[in-house]
Each structure stands twice: as C-alpha cells, then as structure tokens.
Length: 171
Image (cartoon, rainbow, N blue to C red):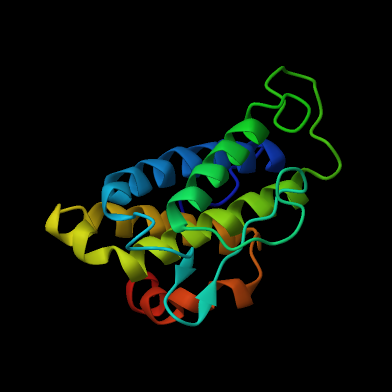
C-alpha cells in the first residue's frame, strides 16, 4: 500500500507530510466548486439533511455555530493553514520534536477536512462531474480514506455520511 509507513520513517513526519498534502488537495477541490457554493445555495454547512456541521475554533467562535458552507470553508482553510504553519505543531527543522498533542491536532484537522468531501460529494457532485473532475476527486478521496484508516485517524462514526460511496469506490 502506498499509504503504509515506510521502513525507518518517523510516524509523525509521515502523517505531517500527508496532512499538508491533503490540505492542499482538498482546498483545491473545494476551490473548483466554490463558485456554486454560495450563501443562497448552501446556507448551512452540511452533508445532506442528516449531517450539519457547526464551526467552533475556541477564539472567535467559542460555541458550535451554524454558518453558510462558504464561510465555514473559509474559516476551516484559514484555521488549518495557521496550524500547519505553526512551527510548534508542525516543526520543519531537523531534531525539533513534534508536540505531545500532535496526533490529537491532526485528527481534528483530518476530521474537518472529511467534512469538505462530504459537502462536495453530496451538494456539488453534479458540478464536479460537469467539469470532468470526478476521477480526480475520487482518487484524492481514496488516498485520503486509505491513509486515515491505515493510521486510525478518524472515528468510524464520522465516516458515516459517505459510507455507501466509500464501500463502492474503496473496496
């Protein structure tokens, strides 16, 4: 498997590289559909009728807050970018250790990035297909899915919104 930890590689280094890569790829995927994701078309960040995602960052949004998907995505991408650029969380210098809570932070990032897939697949897949980007997003999703499951980085219950699709394209 391409996602397995290579022999001799540090687990946190491996995870950090993938988190940054997934952030960049998923940010691009959302960017391709963002013009269709407006306050009018997506007044709440959701994945269908059963899943609603509220924003909370502990600073500007101390309590989980309903937001339009576009606003949620903007806050999410800014939040992740600030974390991956924080040398105390994602150290880039050799010999500088990862913080003790690194995997906890990464799980939160990956969980929230999964919500982008949920929203795009459920609300904007027609747009993805009309742009001819279906194969690209599916490939990116499969890589993401195999990685998070290989290292148990997301609780299975959070994967429920895309369970049927995941079973179809990832098995």
